Image (cartoon, rainbow, N blue to C red; front, side, top):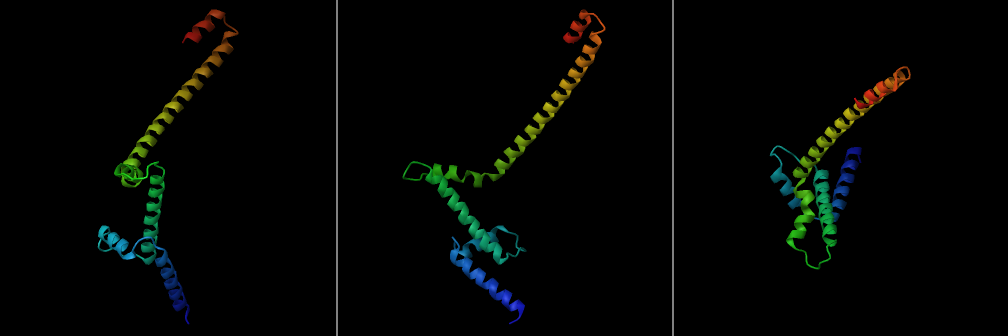
Length: 145
């Protein structure tokens, strides 16, 4: 058997093993992917399998959050709240960008204040050195500035 045939056979076994463990019907996931991708896109087998697994993980995560509710009946509002991170990812990313920009502005303000404090302390240090040779009244005037 050639090396290519062995690789092909191994990859087929890999796919068969994965198909048994997939949470959703592979054909349905592939159909939905093709509906939402450009017509010229081809989907590799591994992508089909991994998308199926990913969707299963999302379902598990949502169910974990739903289990945190103390009620025995799951209501629509609970589902909406549990799926919020997945359905509003654009809004969440926009909010993240807004917060990061605000933090950058705060950081710039802090740096400016730090520079002002350093300049002020330097001036006072210089003035204090000078006040040893001048009278106490000059030192008081400098502190008021």
